[in-house]
Image (cartoon, rainbow, N blue to C red; front, side, top):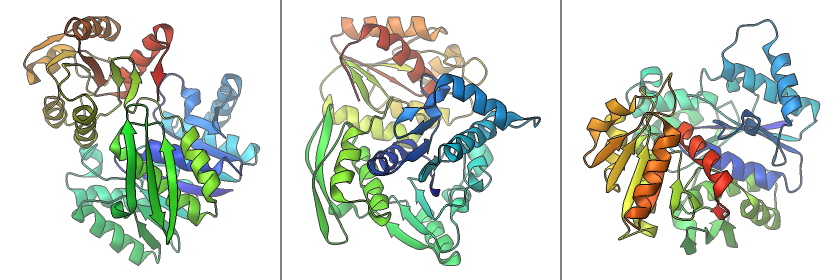
Length: 376
């Protein structure tokens, strides 16, 4: 089994899914990502199919054993056991938090991908990009291949120094090699040149400009692993990535939950919905950068409905409300969604659900029962 290991602050899950989608065209490929949106079975996939519910319970029990491990460690071990028993040729593994001490860092990967590094989980990872990057770069192994998104200078210095120390070959995505032909809420068509070869008319079912970069990093990984252009195109085209600017009529669902991700969402909303009235349904976890998150939401919201999507970790809606003007709140996320949807319709605008993957899960759960035109 060959491992591709990913760490970073944002874009890990999307990039991992693009890589796995390409590899699945010719190989048996396992994929371990987090968080899940609707079911924990989504965390473990082989060639695009979730682990069956019964097998999920069996492998979680095997992985749990008699140890009192953290749940994420159990998920990690269960996925690796399932992949091993199914003789997958490749396993694409996304870190949960950080990298150096992450439970996934037991895999002997020969390729690591470092996605954009920004500020998140600072209480655990450090309060500078240098400290955070050092934790993320803890997945880099000796004599490996490292592929990185473009980074802030502070983070890139750490990546380069780590690769030099580990004798790892570093490849950094060249943004100038990307040429986008068409972009819209239903997807984007683009060309990308790598190692002198131009890959024409690639298509992804994703609206965010950042997703093109994610797809190109996945292409680099795939080329380095020996995949051809036809498989790359098919893998990107077939990839399904929920809760990343996911559309259902005039509703946008996005799991963005830190300032950098919300900044990207703001760019996307302004690009595709300029001039439209925007109602935002927001929930934030209490351990996040609340000031930074709410500031970014304020750049595109005409009004905000605050709610709480997780009673243990979530900031109560009444405590989130003072961060916004033109706001109302409801602690019940289902009721808050209905209220926000009604406001958006009244204003003939769009509803944006963001701030938490927990909130995205609530919204998608409701929409799967009522919406026939979900675009991914």
